[in-house]
Image 1: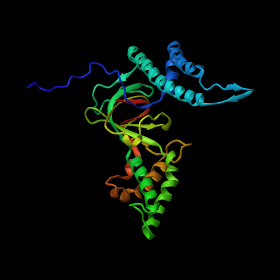
Image 2: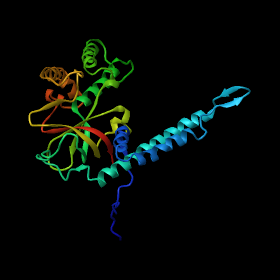
Image 3: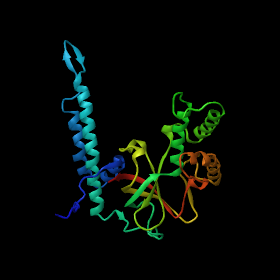
Image 4: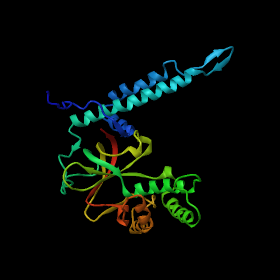
Length: 289
């Protein structure tokens, strides 16, 4: 009997992207390698100028037919391929120029040399911030409670209570599409500072509900929070700097969701409204496996 074994790949060529901000990648790469960017992006024009989407003249009339939809499909395919190609060029340039900060392990003192503006890479387990999780689950539950025929439909005082909580929730978080997607990362290694980041919907590739497990993250350090400093995982005063008043208001509001969270098997506390230093607030550029 032959012993079974797994032969590991020698190189990681394929990347399963969950998130990719290719606008930042293109702008960054254009500053140092404009020629390579132009070469890759020219493929988009090839799709646009390849005869797709043109009108066909028939007795003076211009007819848009199936070719238009074919053009749109072709352009989307090329755009999708291009964003991945540009990332590889940009990533390779960073590695070759030794311009990418890479963490070897993780511990309490890992942030001593990290500076805002550093472009970094690390492996980590990712998950939605507790505040984000409970708000999204409550939004789903409130909708079910109001829907006749739902397994979770409520009536009378119970429904009135849910609607009142939903009113508070809407005042804080806005519509579901406005809810910020703040993710917490626990880098691979020993216990150490958390990493927080906000994902922009426009750069999402994977479904938010499928975010779980270990990923490779590439991003730029926005803030290094020192011991005692705090930053909220949800803003209610976007036009102003973070203040004690905002933090206290968030804690008071979250307190109303502590008991409802238990119904979903979740444990939260008012302190979950913030990320406390030492920690990193990161602007994500790419998340992949």
